[in-house]
Length: 315
Ligand code: SER
Image (cartoon, rainbow, N blue to C red; front, side, top):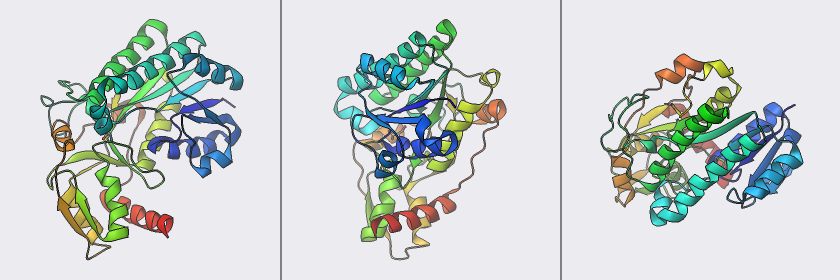
């Protein structure tokens, strides 16, 4: 069995991905790592290493210690938080990725996964059904780092034959870990507040539509991409990936079907400008064609699961 390293195992994606990788490839074969401890579920089900991706020598040591063949590198500063500390965020997002790519090259690792984002797009991008190839003029530090990262991934594939694969995730919605400093976080926070207080003050306006996805779809997409035959992977920058698109008013209306007295109010903050620069919906036909991607969850199904699981967690 191959040995997998997940960097950023304590974050929003890592909290779900590690568990699914352990289910599919074995607890002992999936090493979780992060700078902070992970969930109890991760800490108790397999090996955890404290690892800062900026410390390349430690990364090499961990890879050698466990004979790692694949890395899922998830650690990053998200869009909202990155705006508060641009240069530090650039270092973490860029140098972290470059360290992983360099290590993959030096140790001849089999495969690397690295997430890109809808944040690679910008104000001049086609807003609706954004195609795989379009104008990319991101105006956030996070978006700039993701676009540069995509170019580096393709470069390492072309020049050094590093088998790196990537997805442009939409806003991800999950109940295991809370979102961490992004612009799409409202779509997770809203469920906690609906259950706890029956009200939510949203930092985006009612009509701000963004591409979103339920975490299980994102995890399936990630593992399907990584398990696909190499010759099927035609895009070495990052694939567009789509699930559902909705705005705060629409998700609030869906929640009201379950919590009838739920109330949403709106008070835009600095993240409104970030959301305005991003697409409203994404065309992922290239991913569908190349490796057979298809999402499963719609807004209604996702809302039902999120309300049920978060209520369970809070009780
Ligand atoms: N969910 C991310 C963010 O809002 C987008 O990739 O920053």
